[in-house]
Image (cartoon, rainbow, N blue to C red; front, side, top):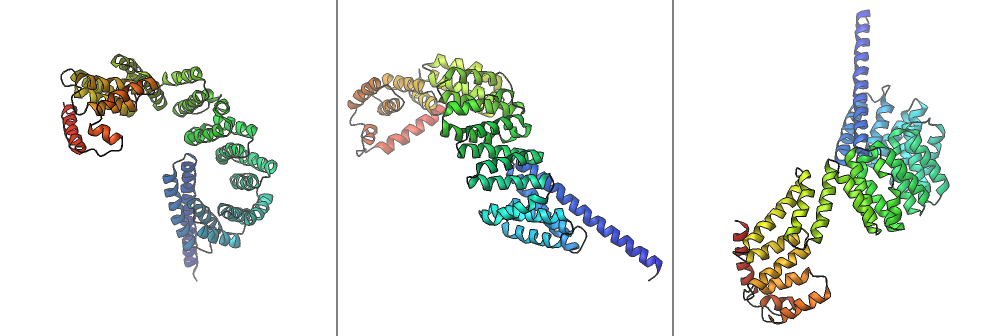
Length: 443
């Protein structure tokens, strides 16, 4: 072989190695993107990224199965399969990575993730020895942190709380990418094991982790579990630091609204209202949600049309939010129908249905149903309005009065149907009513 031929072969080999390394590097970058999406709760994006990792890592390995980075590619392939929940292919890649490994860290990491695959499959007896062996040799870092996390889960599930909490501490401090999962696990296991101190510690950590705000729904769900376990007052106390959480404004507002609901459930209505008001005075999605909550509370107490106007100043600053705009449209429509009722009383019935179903204003709806029934007592739909009024009346005295009025309309198809009796003519009445209401609503 000439010198030139040898040189050319060397260049080709170097270029091939560079292409292989670059493919592996790109796959690792995709894996990191998938991990970020997973931590943020964006599961669909995470699954898509891990699927891309599988394609790229497998292709890279097939191009040079005996290459310098073959064990790295197989380890990455196995981890991606794990994230996708494909345990069979994950084990195949990880076992092959361990067999080909030329470095101890790759061999130990392959064994560690093989142990995690058994833990995910619900086989702690097979998982624990592999995790123990790997954690003895791996240095602090991402791999070890994940190993501690999974060993903690196994130990806590087995009732070995002290050892489990120790591993969970190590998982949370060994690598920043794992601390969120470790804190969420601490809260979940604290509730499951009836350990308030560990639960409180987990919540405190979550409130200081900026990335935890992206999992606000999960945090709220965990505090609801705490409320079921210990009562809403205890769960609300867990979130006492929510107003200073190191989260972005919107998730911080959402967690404070969650605390307000717990306070309300615990009977502290004043504290709950103060919390909601403070969130409502901000801006963004959580402020709009707080204003919706305040407005709905106002509507739930509304007795007449004048009370509707008290809800509008609450809602208007957040009118750009779709749910707020929908509620304001409902308020305006009820007012329009109420005005129309002076000319066409059936519009009061339509307004009552809207107040009940869309505004959540039962007392106002009751008044509108009764206004229609009183104005046109001979209409065939007046008994339906009385029944509708009865359905939103809580006071027993008022319910008895309404039942007395309905006794005088015993032959109405609506009353007969409500009593479980044959109701001839009901279908024709409903069809005509639907047509008339459609005409009223179309104005």
